[in-house]
Image (cartoon, rainbow, N blue to C red; front, side, top):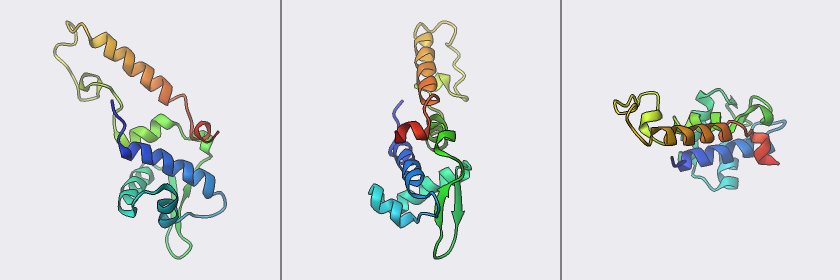
Length: 132
């Protein structure tokens, strides 16, 4: 499993919003400048985060984005899954990865264990943990 820039940048965007949007909406341009992410790519990431229900948006001159909840209520694993999809290290472990060799595969339990460790770790951290 390799986390793409989309997942990595999504965490940076969420942290940026946690630190900068307490009483106001933060514009795409502000985030773009602070995080050095192009507006075009940032729009894609914001769209995924918004679709996942993580952001409040406002249009207009004072518009932008802010978090809907406290940083402590956002699980890192959920943010990564919203932007990356399944985090399984191999296809066999994904929702659609019904492997016909699963029963005789000598490596399956290894990959299953790795998947469990990854899931437990990313689901044990919140946005607030990353900020601290």
